[in-house]
Image 1 (tube, rainbow, N blue to C red):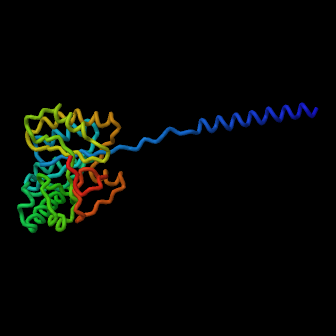
Image 2 (image 1 turned 90 degrees about the vertical axis):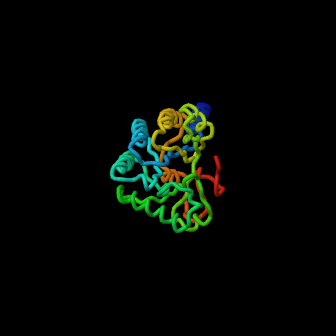
Image 3 (image 1 turned 30 degrees about the vertical axis):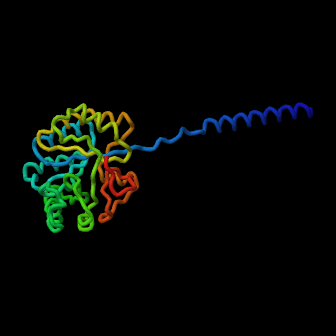
Length: 246
């Protein structure tokens, strides 16, 4: 009798040990892959030529972007493109009023250029820009000290050069894109090669595991709180140096 009880106890213990081991094995989770985010951005609009073509592609792929606009290009007609962009989940930011080399202007003129553009964007969209991309990425310390916006640069593919076709732009950009990047493209009139490149860029970014969001959202997703007057001009929101040239 005693032997029977001992045998049953042994079998029960073995069964419990097996179940515990099985639970431990099945409870192992696959290693977490960090989320990857990038932001598409476009300079030099708004206009009724290339801007709507860019928006067509963004809407087709349900992809948001950030538009850095030139104040002197904003009027009752072109402003409709800004409104359409916001309705599609995009944001409008500042690219100066005259698209001049900012370091050649007085600081007073720089501040005025940014304010005039901010005023126009707010007039037509109800939202005031908080980010500023200097034309030609031309900036200096006095500008950083005086301007109350966060400065933005970006990683690009020289898409302002007309002899670079869509495939070349795509290849150039995809060879260097990284998590946290702000991608810098242009929607000035006639820049159709970038429109075509965009049809290649968006699917490939997603294939590589990137989620597309606006520049403002990119800072939020990465837990970065950028400050004006810091001296930073961001190509990648995770960068540790003041300026990153890619």
